[in-house]
Length: 284
Length: 284
Image (cartoon, rainbow over all chains, first blue to last red; front, side):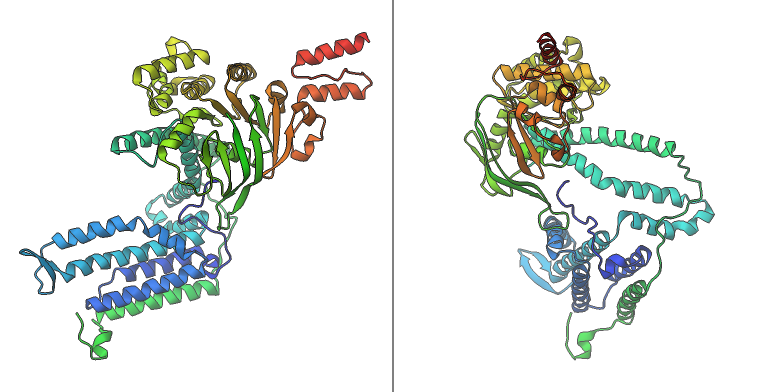
């Protein structure tokens, strides 16, 4: 009964929710690839990146995920942004596009834009993951992974076992979070302050959380293993499925949209397409 | 210590599909020195209620006054004040053995007083004292809490709260999972602590404990107060409407009355009380 967790599955009946998880995963990967493709210049990079962000925001709306949830997940990104900026500024460059100079040290626009580019990529990735995890049941997720890994079975790859491990791990995330919540409450009642205090106090408070958490996680895993063995679980056994996923028009639409976007971005990347040049604009 | 609930509401996961009203307008006043039992079926909101007393939860609306501490929805509370409150209000969670984490029993029990600013030496003294109270002798001091039996772990965890000498002691299902002897031993200890001047709250759904130990009983049903008063008065009501059972001795007495034995109306707390009542009835 803990408060809602970021990226947790939210039960709705949206288009994205009702897509087959395998098709969804494929579409997701297509979209992810586009994030990392290089465009001919800065203006195009940010045009494509910006369009993509708008597109994902539409996906978020479509999957009933609140934009505020996404914004909340960005809060931790601030630190990352500043860190990236510093790193990129410190990297030596040979460019004539100087933003400003501190003494003899030049800060280039390229550094700042590089950091911004990475930030846009990260934001896109986070939003995409959010759409996927909020609209796909953990069980469906692991089913999809198993399906994609199944060809590897023929070379002796334990794809079922891996999928099982994955689905158990996913299944236990909320349980472990509940444990975290419970242990934090118990330790807070014993005077532990998880929010304030210096580094030393923080380390102490985290230890008071981690140790009991490990104890209960190990206990749970042992109990689960016993329970599975009692029911005759055999990883090598052939099994049937209760839920059989069907390929529907939704999946076709989803894959086509994602593939179309991927195709467009690849084409523009390969041909060094510059939309601004088409309109006769000179950009960097 | 006076504790006042003023129209307290608490909502889990507000504005999400998981929204759930745990408390629905609770008005309560605790003043006298009574051992108060808070009962209700699973999910009725009894644990949520008591977590407001040491400010682990902040009400969604309304406020809780604990002595001169105000736990309201939005008022700023300093970390120091919260610590001060948690020193006064000790909370023993369900299955408290999950909070153990130190390498020795002595260290674990002295953890709470140390957090509340008691000097090391004194904290260890308090730990020894608390361990004596729960019936663990010196041989346990330097043992690891993880090598103890379940019952002993529970005792160590309870000692870990008692060592801080709280003015108010809240017990959430303290006997769950204990054998009958250990359960009686534990409850007798709490009764003893109560008679020494500590306010004790007992959260439970074991009505036998309520019959035996409570001076006042509050029934929570669906986040509302369904009954507040004398345990004896409650046992004459139909308890099934709250998904609760009558205590064994009351069920036995009722069965006897049904078969024609006229039992004198008196306060039944223990089996001995019932035996006396039957004896009297037979002699008449």
